Image (cartoon, rainbow, N blue to C red):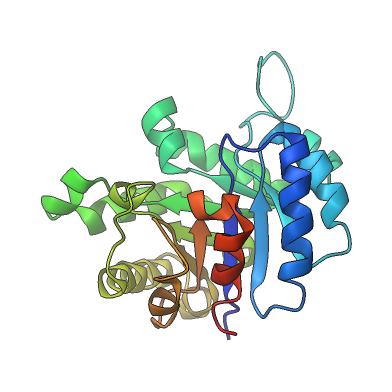
Length: 250
């Protein structure tokens, strides 16, 4: 039975002081909830948030990671640095990293394998643009990103892989894929995971939906067979929005 997994990606928001305030609000409000919960603050905010959430049911993740372990890579953050901070999860391949910073599947795949070698759980993001969806390429784009991101990943490592389907056209736009459209892509992804590995891996893999998830649409999304959770952006920055998403089943 797959456990619902709700993750909050704070993106480039929240100073350490602001992050502590939000973490304190969340810590009390989601204690005892049924879902697995994660927040991913900016790098500079991670230590303060990690301290607040120590001993709670909220995991702390990172929004990105270098594909190198150390060396002359100005501005990059290594897996060892994240490990030292107590980070549990790394988000890789987010559409903003792909579109704005030019990260391709091979580059993301190097990060995925490096993160797994350090024992991180990886949330691998995939998803199509509006143009790609309207031209009937949504499944093909998702397949390319899925296969590319998981190249060389062993079946046993899939226990530490979460897939986040994020239609790019729905991120931060207020538009959301209908629950039916989202579930259809999730089912497609699950079928492709079975082809890459086996049915057990496909049955077990958690597939989150990301793209303007809000308190008023989360229940309909989570009711779908193949949607196992959410990767939440803007709504994760306010406890009054994120808490109802996390506790949607109460």
